[in-house]
Length: 367
Ligand code: SF4
Image 1 (spheres, rainbow, N blue to C red):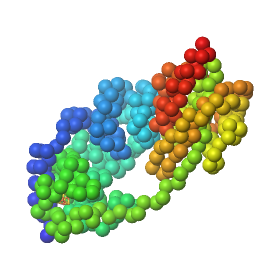
Image 2 (image 1 turned 120 degrees about the vertical axis):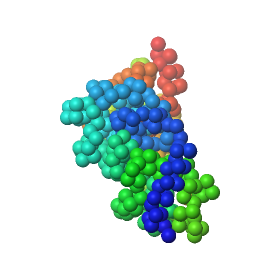
Image 3 (image 1 turned 180 degrees about the horizontal axis):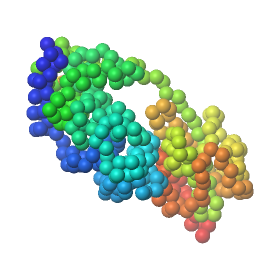
Image 4 (image 1 turned 30 degrees about the vertical axis):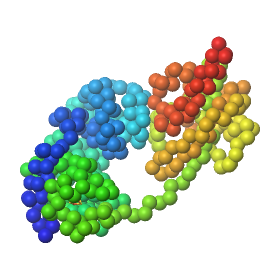
């Protein structure tokens, strides 16, 4: 017998466990659909502990959709800095504008209407609409997939393109019709606290008597997963270019990876070893500037979802020329301190950290 044969027992055990063991998280202390929406967007790609201070800061600064809608997107990105996946912040900002203009500033409680907002997909719709308005929509995230895979011994790999559809079927059968909000959160919480990746703590699990994987001793064999593809490795030359006491920064185009975030001029390279001349040539091609390379500062590494990056960071001096950067949204020459007010993506922040001490020394010598 599986939980699908007796969903009521499973729901009862799960909800009783949740009432006793749930974590007290800031977004669980509110019934405001907008705050719940912000939290779900943040939590989509971010760990709970990381998300908490960002969420608290974001809601304090933008307590209502109207506050977010009227803010400059650059400020929104600045508050999102470090969380990554910046399209989430840009979409949330655009969506808040639509909530204000089309829904009188209130998050619509109609899933079809909510689903039309930028950045709102099936997961966010199910999560926000169930938690905020008790709509009977089952959530399927990584935690839920893992619990269901074990509970029902589901062989569909959780990273397969059809996984969402496959897991949605039992998720929709099991959801508690009377308490969808609590049920969805309980199932996600069980995945986060008990039915964890690696070794689940089945002895502490409220579903231990119902779980097929537990019964058959196969818990660690689930969830199934397709072998991860090898991600490509990109190499960049990054120029920290000083002109008197100012540094050149550029904004990435609005759409695309890290859209709207700021960074230092960079050029791809496939050379194992750079010479000062190759750095000068690469940066000239990228920026239109003639620079003098002062020194190699550091190699920084960063991992994105689809590729890994190694950036060779060089401190350079501007010698001649005007900036011409085709791909960038815009550029600025700014003092070191002013960079703290810009939304820099994580790799750019690492480059700045690698350069800061040296830049400050050079600027002092100039003064
Ligand atoms: Fe996961 Fe173990 Fe609970 Fe099954 S019994 S749902 S494997 S924690």
